[in-house]
Length: 270
Image (cartoon, rainbow, N blue to C red; front, side):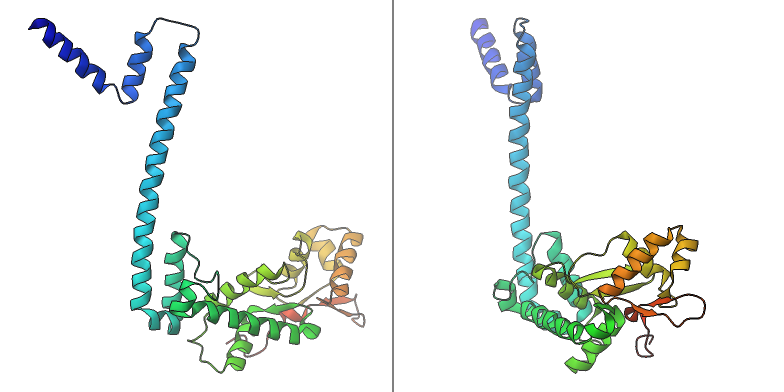
């Protein structure tokens, strides 16, 4: 009976060797060899991979469950999502947390259920039309508030129908067409870029200096930013060439570079 008991205990002990602790004991029980460290590392790697796979499967399962609840929620609150900008923005945030993009396609599941895909694509088309129509005046840089006001006027909808978040999301989707559309922060304001090419740090510095007065000069950039006259003139002349700035050579002190995209109309300041 003693032998049987000891045999059962040994068998039970071998059956319990399934975790990290078991790997350590198994490695220590072996004779010390040159490859014992490699054996231990290999076992740890195998165990780590198994744990990672298990966690990934669990997370994937949870995401699928949450996605199902999200689809049910969307179906129940379809009208609120379509008509209330604040509600729509919160719904977008919930979708982003699990990697769901309702705007990815105008013909996908979300577009068919909610119509939000078509909403943002139509809004994007209007943004393109407004920016291109005003490009000769703005030089491809339009104030965000001006764009918003023009969208309200052309769409015939109230300010509650299109939010700033809606406009920002539509512009983000327009980046799929290239790097011509982007939102550029300039101090406390935002500009909507609608010209090809990305503005570099020097361009952004010039716009920040022109934020309050809508204009700058070579002297201002040299005095306040520490630029050389050649650097300031090169950047400002480039922005004139791109249509972003106007040159006022009749100023008594020195030529001024005006940026029409920074002009503020009474309707923009409301």
